[in-house]
Each structure stands twice: as structure tokens, then as C-alpha cells.
Amino acid sequence: MNHTAPAITGLILSGGRGSRMGGTDKGLQNFRGLPLALNTLMRLQLQSLPLQEVLINANRNLSAYESLGVPVWPDSIDGFAGPLAGFLTGLEHCETPLLLTVPCDSPLFPLDLVERLYQALHDQDADLAMAAAPEADGAVRPQPVFCLLKTELIESLVKFTQSGGRKIDAWTSLHRCAIVPFDQSGDNAHAFANANTLAELQQLESI
Image (cartoon, rainbow, N blue to C red; front, side):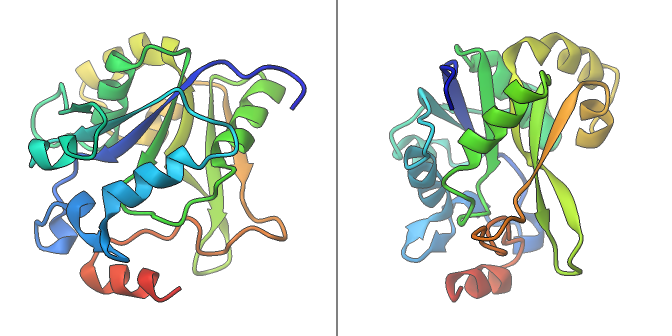
């Protein structure tokens, strides 16, 4: 990259109900001996394009998350409103021009995630960039929770959520979105695998 990337804040989305994991707080489940959220934080700190700051969006067990050493913010929208509520919380507390979102339950995401999303955002003059990855059936599909977005999108997102909108793709489709496929040779086919259940978490540990 020959141009200087602007400062980027990372946001770990850990605000869900964990309903498919029996209601446990997913980000605090252990993966290779460490909480998933801590694995995610360490992976963000190892990115080839460094982040200026990392925040965590969580709605329960806030002190456990705060012990990881970064700011923790609960949803500003009530009722576990899903990932977009996390996006909104991140945008409200982000002091950089760009915000990167990652979920707490995909501990193997690529170490060049930030760099590749930023490159596409810049090259395509987009408002946001979203990773796409091969799924079990071989199709490469967008992974909307892996998103790099301009902080100025906050007004649009406030309007969308206030009118009752909750679906990520319904909101992202309102903006210029660069889709970044992570299916090149050398990309880990399991990089975006996520653990919705304890069984899936154990499967991920064995990869």
C-alpha cells in the first residue's frame, strides 16, 4: 500500500444472547485455553495494518470484558437488537474515520483482514468494505459482521435503526459496498468459521 491508511478503530461484537450456545456469554467461552473475546482481541492486535484502538460491545458480564483491558460499551438500543446495534454502539464511541467490526466467535480470521478491507474500500471509493468467504457448500458469501465502515455512516444507521431496521444487508445495500473475497490461494478455508454451539467451538479448536 503506497498511500497512508487513516486511523482505524476495531470493534469486537460480543453483545448477542448466545441462544444457540444455551444462553452462555459466547465471548467468555474458552478457545485453546483463553476466552474467545481475548483470542479475538489478540488477533486484532496482530493485524498487518495496525489498529489505533479496540473496543468491545457487550451487554452482560461487563466487568469480565473490562478485565481484558480495553473499553467496553453495551448496546445503546434495548433488547439485544443484533449486530447492527453493535455497529451503532461502535460508531458512537469511535474517534477515528474508520471502524472495523469483527464477531467474538470467529477466532481464526485472517491477519491481513484490515489491510485487505481497507485496500478495497480505498480502491473502489466505497462507504464500507465487507469480507466474503467460502462456506461449506463451496459458495463464496459475504460475511457482513466482518466490516470496515466509514464513521460518517452513523447518521444513516441511526435513521435505519430508529425506523425499526435490524437486518445488516438491508442497511449495507443502501451504501457503496466493496465485497472482498478471501478465497485466494494461501487463504485459510476456515478463517471465517464461527462457533454458534459448544460442539462447533470444539471443532474449531481441532483445526
